[in-house]
Amino acid sequence: MARNAALRKVDFDVYLITDRKLVQEATFFRRVEDALKSGIRAIQLREKDLKVKELTAYAEEVRKLTDRYGAKLFINDRVDVAIAVGADGVHLGKESIGATYVRRISSDLVVGISTHSLGEALDAQEQGADFITFGPVYETPSKIKYGAPVGLDGLRDAADKINIPLFALGGIDPSNIKNVRDAGATGVAMISAIFASDNINESTKEIMRLMK
Image 1 (cartoon, rainbow, N blue to C red):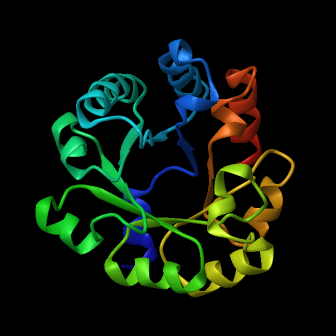
Image 2: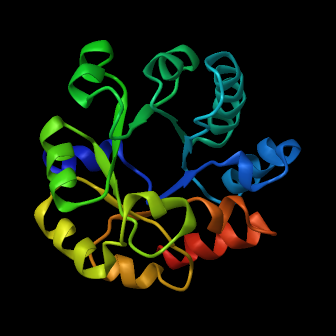
């Protein structure tokens, strides 16, 4: 896919990924709305432990919020839930259904794919992903299972070799946003730097400012 075509679908540069285990569950939807109020325009609902009925209920509520603020909603892994709630897209992992099959189910869904090496990034592009997340760039507890960080050199190499939007993931915070952008990342994907922040409004606004 040509870069310009992909960018028409991927019209955001900060990709917020949820993790309700990082926060008091009662604050989940308020945190989502605070991030949206402060400028976030793409959210991936990534709550892998929820059963499909619970996940669908969460997705419906987040869909209402993203609609209210003109933002995109991506559902992790579950194409059925994404279609059921009218989400904009799905985000696929290593064990997910392939992007080719998603296209057969729905040609309208925007497809993101998680990648952790140059080989995986190239494969995702070949599958027809609209964008990828790539990392971990830096060490972070949530990504230990994916092995050693790819670092800025690995990020730079991937950014040079693929032509779809690439979102740097893993240990990204305001202190290193400039470095990952200079290395060629189209945008950044974040979990704790926003979602677990003591002040989501301030944190999000600072991140959005740094992305300009």
